[in-house]
Image 1 (cartoon, rainbow, N blue to C red):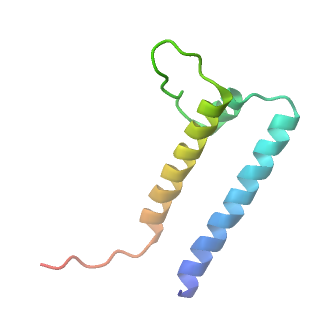
Image 2: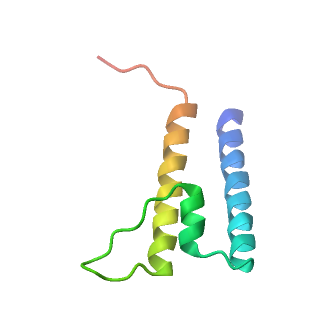
Length: 85
């Protein structure tokens, strides 16, 4: 792995650690999963029918949102390879 790739992984790990600590602190302060998701810009999860959205639904939505965000950032920071004709 080259140094740029190592830095990207290290930065991602650092971001994950910061997010994890922030979520733990928010939960300890009594903030709900829905409020945490709103602060992160996570859209409400889709449920079947009129089922209530559970904490588990919010947790999965947050993980999916953050994984998609990380993938977008990785696509922007990784060098592009020339397309073969």
